[in-house]
Image (cartoon, rainbow, N blue to C red; front, side):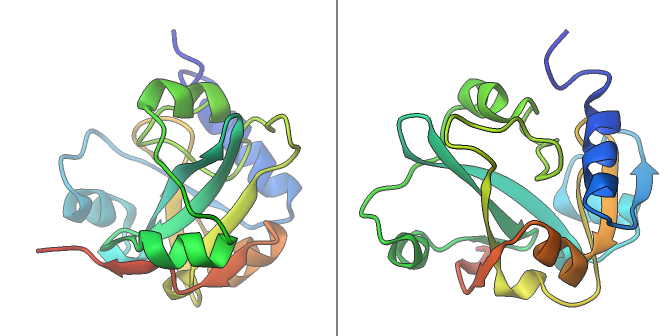
Length: 166
C-alpha cells in the first residue's frame, strides 16, 4: 500500500478543515481526461486546480497551483522565485516529499519538508469562486473557496502559467 492509499483523503480533509476552510468532498470513479475530471467534480476545467510539486534544490520543494487548462510558465516562475533552475521531480520523489501520489497531490496535509511547511505559489487565475483540488486519493476532490484557500495557505499569487496547447 502506498503512502497515498487509504487515509490520504481523510488526512487532506482534516488538514483543510484545520485551516478553517469549508470543504465539499466529491468522490468519483476513474477519469481519463481533464474534461471528465472536471465534469465529475461539477466544475469547469479552469476551476480544476492541479497541485504541482516543483523542486528548487535538493530536498527543497514548493507547490504550484495551476488551473487545469494551463501549464507552468517556467521563465515567469523562475523569475518570481529568483532562481535559475527549477524541475519537476519524478513521481516517486513527489510521493516521498508530499505523501501523496501524482494525481492526488493537494496542498492540504502534504508532509512538511526539511525546511518546514510548504511554500505555495498559485497562478492568479485560481482566484475567485470555488476550485476543486486533489483530495489525497484517486477519485477524491476537495472543493473550496479559492480566496479562503489562498489566504489560509499564505500563497504567493502571480501570473505563472500559460494556456495549455490544444
